[in-house]
Amino acid sequence: MNRFEGKVVVITGAGNGMGKAAAHRFASEGAIVVLADLYQGALDKVHSELIAEKTLCVKTDVSNEAEVKNLIDQTIKNFNKIDILINNAGVHIPGTILDGSIQDWEKISSVNINGAIYCSKYALPHLIESKGCIVNNASVSGLGADWGAAYYCVSKGAIVNLTRVLALDFGLQGVRVNSVCPSLVKTNMTNGWPEDIRNKFNERIPLGRAAEPEEVAAVMSFLASDDASFVNGVNLPVDGGVTASDGQPKIV
Ligand code: NAD
Ligand code: ADP
Ligand code: HBR
Image (cartoon, rainbow, N blue to C red; front, top):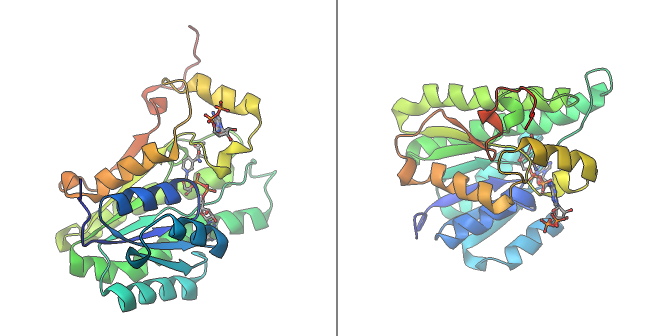
């Protein structure tokens, strides 16, 4: 499939995990990919795995408005348009509202919420021009709540509703906005979690395992493609069935 030939795709948090998997997926389907991450080393590694002329790396802290503006400016300067924005960069800090410091909240909200707001705000004029789309990486943690992850869940709830408000406000201008909502995915974010916690997740996931980053990237690519031309404002669980449960305990 070459669904993204000629398309310019901006991916944040592209140095690792699902962002990196998305970079590979979109590139494998013909896209020009613009990779943004905090870490130049991680970007260089992904760059080296892709076609050089169809890849641009822009070291970007998405929580910094000026750096996001630079990311969009560099993309336009090099490729003259943006077709797809993948708001993927994110951080996780566990804890209840009493455990977590105000600095934890500032970190989570500035990266997870402000980052998606800044990228959307500066990319949207170009997406309106190209009749493009946005795919956010939210989480099942934004569809419902988890114990002991207060700030993270609040931030992901904001992304779920950001998806909806952008879908309403820009649908008539031809821009679609959707999100993926994964449960546990095997990335740097979660690989260090204690084994007993990961096992508890596996017990609650009807498919019995965490997702591979590529399984989420595949859904991002579907939502960004013309195959999803009438899908708009959807927060799509990619969760092995977690949200099929009403939350009552597993007794069998
Ligand atoms: P990851 O840690 O493997 O990758 C995240 C990437 O984002 C890293 O390369 C990191 O350097 C980058 N990043 C962090 N802060 C940044 C900033 N300020 N500016 C630019 N880049 C920044 O994690 P992942 O699991 O691939 O996470 C991707 C997204 O998926 C996040 O939004 C996360 O909340 C969400 N998510 C993760 C899981 C999971 O189980 N791993 C589940 C649901 C949703
Ligand atoms: P295994 O599951 O046998 O440990 P994998 O190849 O499936 O090995 O896992 C690759 C990486 O993902 C390893 O670093 C491992 O620690 C991590 N990992 C494995 N299972 C999970 C899980 N349920 N949740 C998060 N990370 C996991
Ligand atoms: C585990 C999952 O809900 C996450 C890190 O978002």
